Amino acid sequence: MPIPLEAGRLIVGYVGNRADICTLSRVSKGFQVPAERALYNTLDLRDPSTTITICRTLARQGRLSSLVEALTIVARGGSTDHSGESLPPDYWHSVAAALRRSHRLRFLNIYIENGLPKSQAWILQQCTFQLSAFHCDLDWDADLIQFFNRQQALRDLYILDYNDHVPEGPSDTLLQPSGLAQLSTLECTFTEAANVLIPGRPVVHLKTCLSSSQEDAKRREVLLLISKIRLSSVPTRSIDLGDPALDELSSFTLLMGILDSRLFNLRYLGTLLLPVGGRQRLRLYGLLMRMRQLDCLELEVSHWDPEPTSDAALRSLFGEVHLYCETVTRVVFVYEFERFLVTIVNGTRTVDEDTNVELLWREV
Image (cartoon, rainbow, N blue to C red):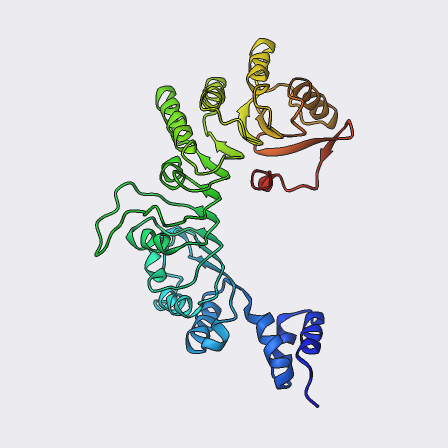
């Protein structure tokens, strides 16, 4: 008696590991469809030989590649002195062939580690899938730009690289206004990438990092970024701006630039340096009080002595922030790269150790 499809799905759902699901897929036709769907819907490929084997299978069998909706590729090299030697010569060609057949792919992560060459965006040529989310460690080049120009549904993008001067290719190497038309969450290493990607697109959440350390150059970089944020097609709600040389002046420059540009819809803002001196701290609070929608702040306190990382000290600092900024219900205090989240619920201040603070900028 044939097993109903729904019954097969339920049974597969109770199987704990992929090896058993693989065995189950060969038991009968009734189990094959739900088992293969469970096996191939989400793939996490790290070992080079396994990656090549599975990618070749996907390239040969369209029935299986059509099941893939989420794919993670982790390319790891050996030592940085022998970059690329640990990957077989047909590694990227196998990946490219699988991507061309995975028409229903929606979530793609490509991590390239240990100094391996990142100039592999050619693997995206002839791909027809429309992504929702993309983590991209690939070099910014003509192939990547052309891929972005074809993406109409991509909402969540991490981009590691950016290059102002892309050599001309066989076709247009400029990012078109129609490309990435739905982009709403952007994480990029360089503000230059944000300056190109934000204008005209509905970027609600932004995380990026300043590259300038000299005072005047940093000020120009901050103000240019803010001018581009103003060109988003919808109000931006979160800005997470890293600054390797964070100081009071750059924090005030950022805040005043935001206020002068009337970005009053911000609900998340970081990272600002919290001054030790009372007068400067009051000045910071005075600026923050004008941001009536602000809910979450990230404040750098590494320069405080003694370190304010005990629960009592964190709650006390939060109480001071909340006294002046009543809409703020969550503050992330950063001390020597450690993050401490303090929240207020029903008037009670609590140090929250369960929430993933790295994702807060995405959630407001």
